[in-house]
Length: 183
View 1 (tube, rainbow, N blue to C red):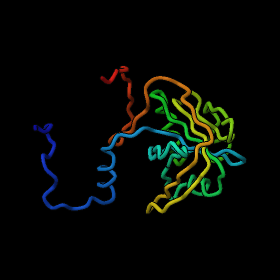
View 2 (cartoon, rainbow, N blue to C red):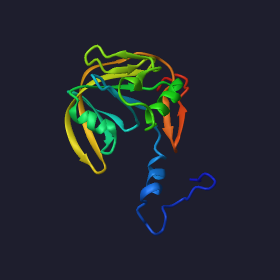
View 3 (spheres, rainbow, N blue to C red):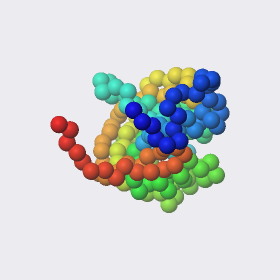
View 4 (cartoon, one colour):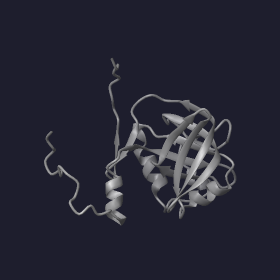
């Protein structure tokens, strides 16, 4: 087996655990999809998240991980429902916007962003997203500097076709792919 140029063929000999920025860079080697979590109501809020996963089909459950120091953490602590929009390849600007802590907070946070109110939750869902999930928190778990929120699905659907937005190594990219048949 050969390795790519510049890649170590074996783990570092000292076996150290990366910390801080170094650990963030190591975690960043795992490519993920990109979502925007949203809560509606009088004080709507959105946040870009790549820590999203399916958990169970029966009952239908998903999980999101939210940093304890974020506005979304406090909004989800009080929320009875929230939305998740899976971003399409053309949504890089939206991902950057909802990741920027300098954006407005409250209803003006969504001005200029095309959204659709969730049919079950009223949470603002990103127009043109590949898929939408409407959720209610089910269980919460300590995840260190994050809280792991497992949520029960109230509604879900694939609403657009095309490539997905990806996050890898600190950069946004896409999956413009050809459909293939596995044989």
